[in-house]
Figure 1 (cartoon, each protein chain N blue to C red):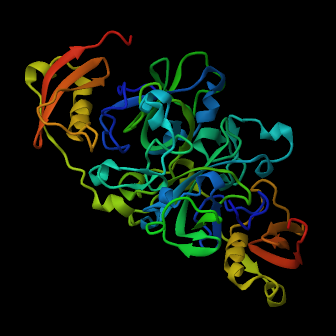
Figure 2 (cartoon, rainbow over the protein chains, first blue to last red):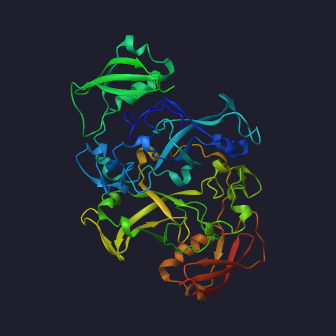
Figure 3 (cartoon, rainbow over the protein chains, first blue to last red):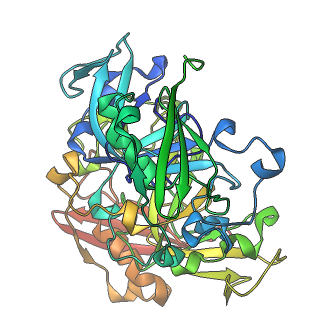
Length: 239
Length: 239
């Protein structure tokens, strides 16, 4: 996956919360066969099965190990739930599952119709999606169509997530700083900030946090319900 | 997974179509920690990520390979779609994804409350589910809670599956043969037969098919829209 999220910090805790940003599932060369994507744009959503890579987990070896319980951010970080009752990365098999919108298929950056074009292609073949909660560079193992007939249960009980403390922050983004951000990425960035990128159990007032987003380093503080962006630095190192 | 489906033949092509049968996700000994399941019974559904094992694919090596297109049973088997637009097993990574009801957690066959009991257990720990489309013995890699907030899109476009030719068969099950089946498994078996276990592109009239279901071998014919069970043989060989 190619995405604007360069680090675990700041990634929305659920897919589909930030719909404004697009990401790309780049198909490996040996699988760049247009036939394999025939029919996929007839679906609104796809499932992506991916791997929590080492870089998306904390580097501390103690934390990368499987843990029977985790502290879900939605419970404020002070209550423990079984890892299999959550989507935490610290699980026996570090598989991630995301439900994302499918926007289009691109060949070398140009839209292509997988129902018309056939066979192997030599250019970069990518499925463009939106709403993903995957870090840049995340390995994707499989994609599958979303079928409402079998996959949608709007009235399903949602366990502890029904007691969710998720709330949105007010984002104070000074116009002079916002202008430094690519226009098409502003909404996605603001939505990401509104969701509060901080760990639920490590929230400090008057502390400057740094969020690596696309080619920017966003510096911010949170006081009460307001997140204030204090600086934007353009990163070049990762290019 | 422990299930009544002993072979690929006869497994419903979508999870949740046969709700009457229960299956068991048996937790491997090293993960038999009740804490890891805390909170899971507060959900109605879970996601199961599993592997299409060799035995669930055709034995013919030519078929086990990845194929860019497949013939979805829902299209009557005479139209090809891209493998990533389907949930076919013949995909680069043979991962399966099923949405199943969670019924309860059992320790050595007795219901146990994972929110009360703590720590490692020595008995057989299993998550009892219903509606699974997995073969007996299928390896399970991960389970995750179903969250309607992010996972449910009842109005999503469903691509080629909207043109589905799925239909139900009438099932003629002579009472003398039905009596041979465990009472609690009868509904599940009949639902399985109603969905037509035959390959979409290999349907013969006046041909006797055999379906291995639980400890039974079910012999049947299909003529028009009616499936007639002609014999039930009790299998012992797999025990």
